[in-house]
Amino acid sequence: MCGIFGFVSEDKLNVADIIIDGLKRLEYRGYDSSGLAAVINSKIYSRKQSGRVFELEKVISRSIKSSVAMGHTRWATHGKPTNKNAHPHCDCTGRIHLVHNGIIENHKELKSKLEKRGHIFKSDTDTEVMAHLIEEFSKKYSFEESVRLTLESVVGAYALVIISADAPDTMIVAKKSSPLLVGFAENSKFVASDVSAILPYARRVVYLHDGEFAVITPSDFRVATLDRKKVFRSQELIEQSPVDLAVHGFLSAKDEARKNNFPHFMLKEIYEEPEAVENAIRGRLIVKDGLAKLGGLESVEDKMKRLNRLIISACGTAYLAGLTGEYMLEEYGGMPVEVEYASELRYKKQLFDARTALLSISQSGETADTLEALKEAKRKGVLNLGLVNVVGSSIARETNAGVYNHAGPEVSVASTKAFVSQLAVLSLLTLFVGRQRGMSLVMGKRIASELSTLPEKMRRVLKEAPNIKKIARKYHKHGHFFYLGRKYNYPVALEGALKLKEVSYIHAEGYGAGEMKHGPIAMIDKNFPSMIIAPSDSVYEKVVSNIQEIKARNGKVIAIATEGNKEISKIADDVVYIPKMLEMLTPILSASPLHLFAYYVGVMRGYDVDKPRNLAKSVTVE
Ligand code: G6P
Image (cartoon, rainbow, N blue to C red; front, side, top):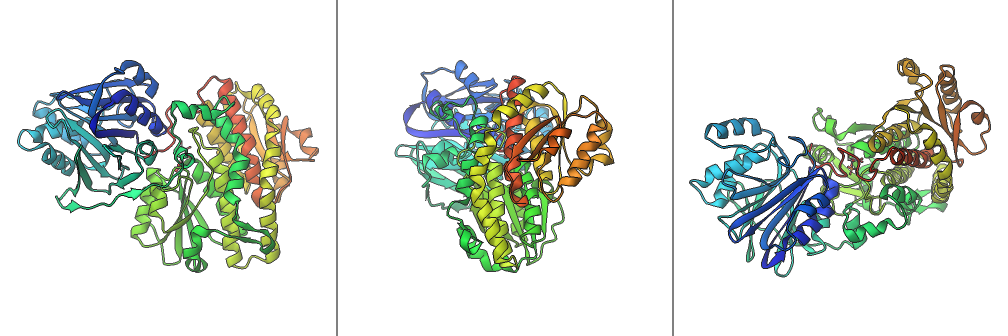
């Protein structure tokens, strides 16, 4: 994973200001350590530091200027997040430095060969092997050829930036599987893992393709493939507005101000959930005709009519949105759906036929597992659809057609408003697909009109915040939690448990409420509370029986129930009410209380809920 940022300029630029700013914009990709390196008077200045980018800021010189510099913010894969494992890594001479995003799979065998040749390794990373390989090849070849031969020797994924004190005007960059692009400003070129870091400086960009490397100097930019074929890549103009940019989740000092009066981005984004749904459905509903208008799918509308199977592929919270979508699309859309972890789908035998489509769901549009599963499916020729938040992201560019959720910037690492907006788009898709295949006008109108009332009802749910905070105070010291729900609210239970784990580090398990009795109930006692989603829907009576089973074993129950349900307050210990809603859409209402509960518990336990330990906003390694 990790974020990479660098520049090559005709001028001498302030390294600290520019590299630190770029790294902060990429910090969502990893924040366990960071580092930078710059060529100064044919020597390399390099500093690295464990912890967030602001820790690096404290140990670097503020005044150095250079024409060639690069930085890295890390999410550890090989080697603990210590100073020595932070990037950049260098060779034995200290003259070749590089930063890397990805994983080098054959690093062990390469390392042992290099050690036999006398190379001394300073870190536990897979990355360092490449610096020593370049050093080894440099004994016979030029810098460029040494990098090329190194790239031929390694197996795995990489976005790489390499500088050498012996080629002080040159930066070489390379890409395979991990993203990398180059931006062009008047006197300078910038390289980065994603466009958010580049756009403050340049709007014209070139996306490198897999298997390509580029040689960048102040006056030159050349792209070639590893087998030495020259490649011409024309520059693309990025039209994104600053708001679109922020969707990437970057932070700079100025962006911090966007928290407004909220103590954390997570809370701000939960409060933006109604607006995120509003934006997802804006202009896409024709209530009087019971239709959803999805412009991004118009080009494939006819193909979609012929589909008999939809495979949803995603990770994390996006996967849980997909699971909810399965219930919607099957019951109302009449479309058979399977939902897969993208990390599993890629390695499964994919039995696709001409009437199968893949729908990849991703907030960032950069998750490596989702992207790779999509590329694999693409090779098999299936129709590839996307549900993505970040405009112009890798997944958005790889799919044949798709729908943006327009949730706006999601900065907090734990996904909240993107989840509800994904659910809103999946509801629209259900309407779109359903009306293609037998859904009645009456049902279409019902779904469309209920969907249009969602934002207002979500705002009512947020008024429950003081009650939810009180409940969080009561339970925040517990070490375990169950989250239970059935049918539409089963995936939401999984989402509630995931959110609690992510931001409060409490052990939480999500289960189908009916499955509880087949094992997990053995764990219930007075110290093992359950959060149960129990709206007045088609499975309400069954869920009430599940609550009784827990109460009979002295378990505490927090219930999320429909307004006006007095019965539940007699059996549950605590209740949060949500407005009445068409069953299919209740998950969009029940998600916010779970997000708020996780937020309050995380804060009460004293954690940095916006940047939880070990996580990253966008996971770009498989
Ligand atoms: C990471 C994040 C999760 C997110 C998942 C999928 O693990 O920490 O919050 O749900 O990636 O991200 P995507 O951007 O593909 O939705």
